[in-house]
Length: 144
Image 1 (spheres, rainbow, N blue to C red):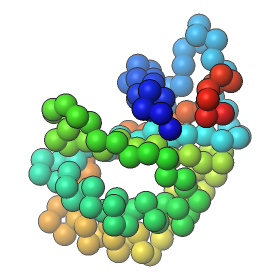
Image 2 (spheres, rainbow, N blue to C red; image 1 turned 90 degrees about the horizontal axis):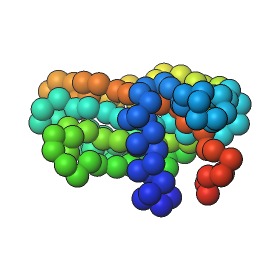
Image 3 (cartoon, rainbow, N blue to C red; image 1 turned 60 degrees about the vertical axis):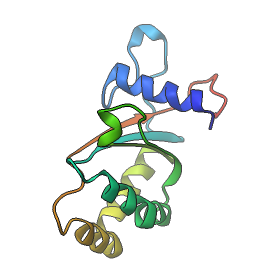
């Protein structure tokens, strides 16, 4: 994925807020419920916990996501403070919104994930906020 495409996704999420794809006056299709979707997720870590969050993703989470049918597209770290000190942004793809729901349900109930989550939070939570936005590729997107 080109950096400009990722930045466009990030700008879209910031401009329209969590859960909103586009305003009707832009002429973008309504949110689909079937077909490939992308999920842009932003995690905020408590002070001093970002390295622990990166470690959990690096060592465990990506593999467990894949095990449950989620496709890891890209993981990003902001360059500028304050976000560079506490934020992880990533993009997953799913075959559909329904597939995303099923994957997340399976992930949350996975005994391995429960163990990893518990062990990674022995010294306190490593995530204080999660934002999720579902997106679909436009008809002119190079990724479509």
